[in-house]
Image (cartoon, rainbow, N blue to C red):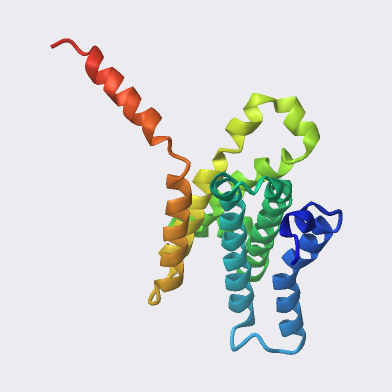
Length: 210
């Protein structure tokens, strides 16, 4: 039998994951080359890249729960790479929208951000991703110390904004964005320390004068 843990610890695991993460965008390039993107190629590319941004984001935030539930500590070594791929796909999603929809027109872009809520959510999520990508290297982890973890808690806000961005733009079929919303909700709830919250509430209640 294959030893999955040993495979994930091998020196080949990260390069293999790196290549696998490029498969979605490579497939889009392939389809574009052969004219297989439908009647509206730009919309297809923008939507698919956006979908993969959210998928990689959910996979990234699922790493800690999976480690806690199943003891898969080895998967922590892939979290930074997956997080950077979230930014990569988000940047591609933004760039396609900015170039194809607005032709580098900043004023038109800002107007779109203000007028359309789903664009507001998506652009806000992208802006929050920037400092996370910039501080993802080991040097910044050491320099920021405890503040690094505090900064990277922005991931939770990014997840919520990403889900809202998807839900708000859907006009008919809510199944797929609904599934993502449920998964995101479960992963975020897993991070809530309900015992600590309950103890704090109990302490506050008991300290109030009768």
